[in-house]
Length: 116
Length: 116
Image (cartoon, rainbow over all chains, first blue to last red; front, side):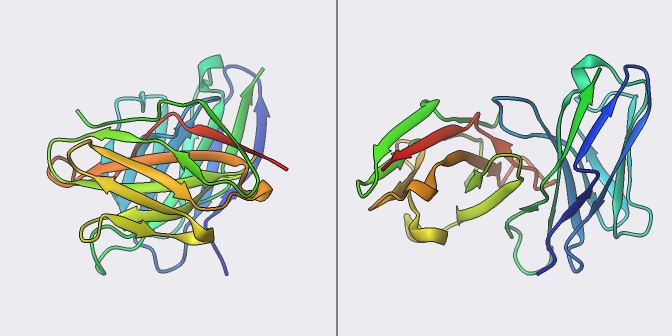
């Protein structure tokens, strides 16, 4: 069973550096989401793709953040000029459209980002 | 605005006893409700969802949840707790009217501790 895969699992970097995370959704899923989870909190929505189109971005997603899903399959989330406040778990989820509008989102194990 | 409240940071229960993890929500339209479980350093695993129909929803691992429209609640229950149920539980909602992105709004989570 190939679930949602995220890489890397952990990333430690110095403040000011750029980082990029990758998410591979479940193969037939056409919806892909990015969430951010800080310690002691629930996940917060960042952005959403349907196929290759980025259809919504949260105001949490400052101009230092960019996400892509170029071929409607895997997605990348890039953070430029990282700040201490970017330290969090970044979660990717995917779901299938077209078989009912409320299919559950399936989550990957996340990328934990630590900013030194 | 959509919101989810999980009033208990932690729930303690003895193995074999019934458990309840509370969740209340606020949406403008009809709610679509979900429960997820998170183990340490892992992503979220889907447990169950309420979309429409019977107010009692059955899910994975023997969990169930009861939708109560008048109390705007969606409490998670299990008749007999296992030590292995110890984890972090998140309630989430999507507003059927207000949100075309299918993003989930999560509560802050409840840590369940089942003692032997």
